[in-house]
Each structure stands twice: as structure tokens, then as C-alpha cells.
Length: 320
Ligand code: ADP
Image (cartoon, rainbow, N blue to C red; front, side, top):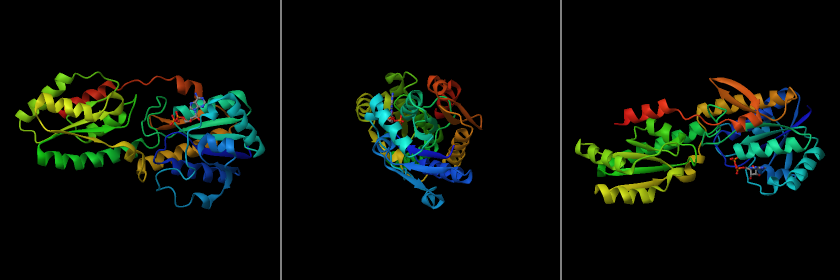
């Protein structure tokens, strides 16, 4: 393996820069030429490629976002688009491609290496933590801390006004951001896509809390369940208690990565280079029981998320 490429794709996540840095520096340390590909698969098709050196990744470990930029590419979803991408890789002499992104980006990597002679490795970069094969993905911890900071602030103002506060966080199919930040932030209720919730029970909890003298009531809502605005109107109508909604939105994707995400990204980026040096292909790297692992991409994408019932139960017991 003489030349490898690295790109970031799909939704950005804090820590992607730390992963790029690890790929570049580990690659160079192992005598490999590392090419940076800008704007995901779109940039690959367009040939937005340049050689990276140790200084091109200086001063980025602490920065959110991705210096390579990210994009979504409809063209890459077609066989024709992937053929174009492969031709570009060949022209630049790239034999191995490291894709930092989520499950969509991994599917793209899987397809191009099925169809052409290019080795691919996926590095999990997504704040949602929705990749079942790895315990954590890069960006999740930082997003949690961002949400926690917002919760702390909202708690102050909700307490002053004795309000119910609903915080809507990211997570279409996976409620991990709501669940973990809800537990860490002492939320009274956590509503996630993995679990059905009972609106009447929710209102009862709010009313009982108020009667017991609770100064505020904090509800963590994952976006996949529904909108916070509507829920706040419904709660206010039934309970008669003032209820406000806050949608955190893209704030959750930004910010300087946490220590955990920087370390995780450094380990996984370096591992991805090792996997290519071993001439393996169609792999993804991740963390399982505190061990850095690499597994087959098909297996990774087939793995079904097991919901952590015990953790959910704990969050509920402690919230009362
Ligand atoms: P994420 O990687 O964060 O899940 P997306 O699902 O938007 O983000 O995927 C990012 C990009 O990966 C897409 O714009 C597309 O170029 C590529 N991609 C996603 N799904 C596929 C697929 N089924 N086949 C080929 N490429 C795909």
C-alpha cells in the first residue's frame, strides 16, 4: 500500500478532524502517501484531491467540523457515479480509501469496493451513536456535553419560572443522545424512538411533581418521536402548567471535541491505516468493550442495535 485517500462524508461530527490528523500522521509514519479528498464522495468524483503532510493537520485536533469539508452525493449512489469515482482514485494512484462518516457513507464504501479494485475502511463519525457494531462513534460524547450544557442553563430558567421545559435533541432512530444526556442532566422524563411513551402518564408525572413541590420539570425528547413545539402545547393544555420547547438543532454538531472524542478519533484513525497496511478491505473500525476492533463492513451494517433496557430503566428510576 503506497498511497491512501481520506474523506469525510454525510453529517459532520466533532472529532472528525482528530481522526483525519491520526490518519495522516500514522500514514506518513508508516511511509505511506496520504491524499486528502474534499467534500466527501462529491469531491472524489470531481477530483478535489491534494497531498497532505504532517503540518497540513497541525492545529486541528481541537477544532470541530472537518477541514476536508463534507457533503452528500446523489451521483455516488449510482453505479455510473462510483465508476467515475474509481477512475479518479486510479488516476491519483490511491489504492486504499478511508471513509469517516455514518452508515450511509459506509454503504457507499462497501459498494465501490464490491464493484472496483479499491480497498475501503470506514471510521464511525456520527453524533447519533447509531452504529450498532461499535460502542461509541466519534462525536457522540461531544454532542452529549453540548446538550448537557444547554440543559443546565434551561434548568436555571425553568426553575425560576416553575415551568416545564422540553428539550428536543437529535436522534431519528437512535435515542442515545436523549437517553445519556437525560440521565446525566437529571431529566424527569426521557422520550426516545426505541420506547413507546404514554402521553397521559407523562402528564401525570408532571402534575405529581408539581404537587410534590418540584420547581421545574425537564423532558428530553429525541427528534424521531415528534416535534417539541406540539408536545409542549399538548402538555400545557392538559396540565395547565406553562411549558416551553427548545430545539437544539445543529448546535449539537459543532464545538471543540471532548477529550474522549479526541482520543477515540486518534485511536480509530490510526487503526484504519493499520487495516489498510494489512491489505484488508471492506472493513470498519470501532470500539468494543474498550478494545479497538475492525470488522467486516457487511457484518457491521447488518448488526442490529440492541437497546440497553437496563440503562433506560436506571434513567427512569433516578428521574423520579
Ligand atoms: P451518513 O454517512 O452520515 O449516514 P448519508 O446517509 O447522508 O450520511 O450518506 C452520505 C453519503 O454516502 C451520501 O450522500 C451518498 O453519497 C453515500 N451513500 C449513502 N447511502 C448510499 C448507498 N446506499 N449507496 C451508495 N452510496 C450511498
